[in-house]
Amino acid sequence: MAWIHEGSLEGGGLRVALVVSRFNGFITERLVEGALDCLERHGVNPDDIDIFKTPGAWEIPAVASRVVLAGGFDAVVCLGAVIRGDTPHFEYVAAESAKGIAALAAESDIPVIYGIITADSVEQAVDRAGAKSGNRGFDAAMTALEMAGLYRYLDGEACEEEEAPEGEK
Image 1: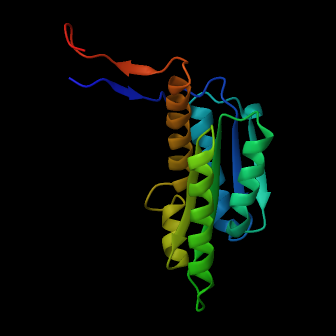
Image 2: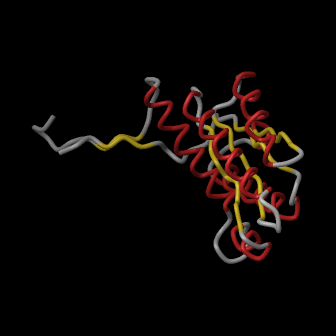
């Protein structure tokens, strides 16, 4: 039987950075509320959460990179909302912010989590920011907690581990 390793959702002692777009603030503020709710419910001290505001989603990867380089955080959660309009601007911003965050996540020693809503309409964005389809900010913060725990395990610290049955492995 395989060994299963997964991160804990216990946030005590973690420092978390939220990098948040101000553009579409009526959506992103709901994402921040969801993320803060999740982190605090799981034991992260509110004093251990820093929020970095960017003008838009395009700037999120650059600021997240600086946050990672500055050190002192166990996870970075990137939150924003890109809503389709009448021009190709949506495609550029959505694609490049996703690529930038993915590249940073792949090279970073801490989890960098993508929590940017891309939606075809304001209604879809509102639904994903807490109205009908849950809150993407809450979900992204939950992912950050689990990944921070898994990274700690991989770095040699404690993590939840399900052992193989007696006599195996």
